[in-house]
Image (cartoon, rainbow, N blue to C red; front, side, top):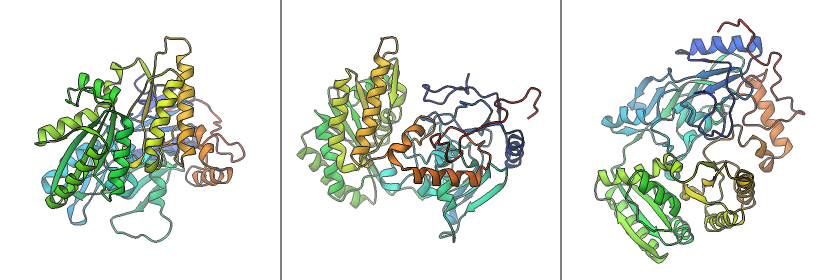
Length: 454
């Protein structure tokens, strides 16, 4: 049951067997065996995904990479590190901090999520507003393709000739192959950091403040929105000390040289006041800063205080449409008589509306599904995308035609077959079923044959 689903428990499907390789050679041997037997392979890191990507709807072999969790090389001269895919995100920054370096991509699950999973889904995080998403920090990859070949792409040198296969493999969600080593960029720890908290009576005012901050030419390291429902749950569950009764809270972080931070902080305080901020607080020390972030990063863990069940959306809108989409979120919630709680990366327009429902109440699940669909379509109407940082997985595969035409999807399917000619790699994920392309997984043996040895 531990491998039946990822954190998106809406989708479940148990593998026939789980294997835990420790070397690239073992992974390659496994892929060749599964290709010969035409058995599905499902890669899995820490299982913290929210798209139904690391579960096995067709059974088959799940490849847990948690034992491939070593740092293979720290190369400070070239500001990079090479790690195995199962290394926990936060461990890399902890290992490099004393030398003055860190790994910038920090999804909210960074305390438990693996770098391989981050790369597979091209994860974002609070600080991607200034520093970019995972693909901006991956220099090279070692991958075992669906054909069982060990392939190395990219590397420490910049500007490789030819097609950018590193960029294509990041975000591949295990449909092209299994990542077995990842070379990532390390950044210098900023000279200074300042974290501010601004509270507002209404989420509309907070949304307008976000647009005004960016329009003023300021790119904070992070710019996070937390609405009233989440503020209450986080205070009760984590004790973060967010202002009680606030309709919305902005968590704003600046980093860089002290003089730059000072000037930007002053400008942001004025912008927030111009948009009716109730309170503006500046973290006075590292302990207070850590507590403010603890509240934000453990938001997902307090959902159980709000509702027995929920659906999380991960759509994106252009940042300038943020006030408009937040009004639409509130309208959709009212229309379906559901509470929609919000905690998200406001600075880059990546929404995470959480639709709360009680699955024991007749009709609530159906209304939640309708509300979720309306949210997604509203984001697309405003020029957004079906997914921001969580990837596509099983959850969003059927939504891809809302954003892409047949020609686009056919091209993606053909590209996928170059790496995975028999369609065994994480079938049913990322791309919708599209018989014309022939990309659908059609196993000759739907389950592991009796007596198979792995």
